Image (cartoon, rainbow, N blue to C red; front, side, top):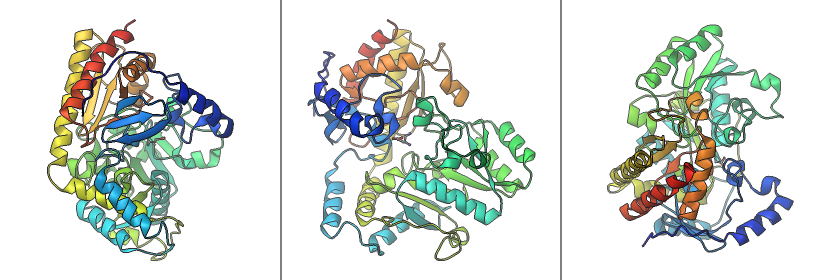
Length: 441
Ligand code: HOZ
């Protein structure tokens, strides 16, 4: 399809009216904070439908989409095969409160793709996966403390909402009222990409750390790439201190490679959290690890965790269809080449416009950071939060006017799907050229 864009301001009157109505009955007018445009100002779009790489709001404006529902839609919106799988499963019943063969199939795909995962427990969200994985780590080690990195986000459970990224960062509330001090005290936070900081935390709490919980590629403070040696260093520190290494691959699982970041970097964590892509756009999460560890989970073992809709057959069907599509053909090659084209185009456009921009990328996750100075890099939370969010906001709105839907925050990654094509990427770069003129004004 053609992706020609016009930079004429688009009418969003219906979205604005919907937002007024929504704000009367839903906190902030949304079901998840980042959607409210608080990080960029203005009124959030309400979506009518989406297909492929294109999303359409209720005013009928079409955009090339890089939000991709924050990661699950690696084969694009409303992929025919995924829709058919969902429809077929739904026609047989939405939920049973009993096991299905689809759970076995999805678990087999996951355990086949990720060497560190021999068994998997399905849950309903990444938040649930991380929360349950931490309980398992504490049970397995008999220790209470956990370490997490500033700016990493592992869902919104109490103990993980400490110096958190994603919406909590966008809104300037890294922690939250309502998190008991006693629970927050169980979380030690350190700087991402800083092994000395990690080592110091282990040394400060000898024999007390249950696990080091980390996004192997940080995707919730924008996209921050692990420096060489960081992940192997964490593995060695955990081993030296008898702690478990927990990779939160909710975002990176099956996105940066078949399997995820741990396959890409050849590191074996003890516990892995998954979500997003393995549910093909339906609500899902999972955590997994060695058989020995996972057999501690109820009913095989004593660590309790349950869920009425866990392993939901419609979500399983969507996940299986998505992963089967990814397995076939040259999906990851295509994602790599499109994403490189996007990142290179962003960098070149910024250079031409003399706008300082650091473009971070791993596979089909891309993030342009508006650094304060030319040549700036973003390797941790401090670098990310030093970026010019006002400039990102101007850029975001100019891109919307040019027909491109980006995450409404400097601190979220852009997601490329197999439904994008070179034409869409080139149209995006053309929009970037136009939009960068506005950020210097
Ligand atoms: N992990 C997701 C992106 N950072 C969350 C999306 C949301 O908070 O709505």
